[in-house]
Length: 71
Image (cartoon, rainbow, N blue to C red; front, side, top):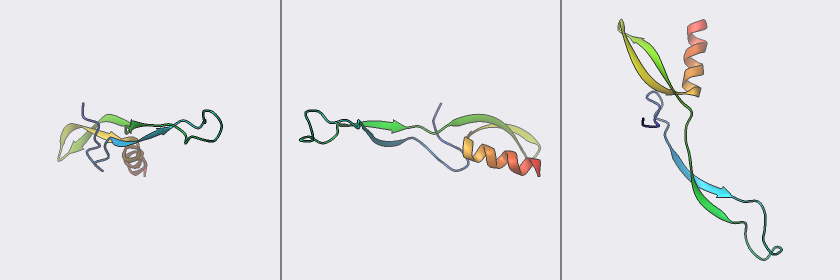
């Protein structure tokens, strides 16, 4: 499953993990290593022109859809 929201195209982003401790006093910078930030993806069913389709959406878009359906 691709980690991509089909509504807003939010996807995996690269970043750095920072360990907030210093070894041997303050002579060295905090160690950093690469990591990935993955979006919170959920599979939902949506009616499109009378047909039911399954799409992947992030939780931000899911909450917006839920609030619009309640109004």
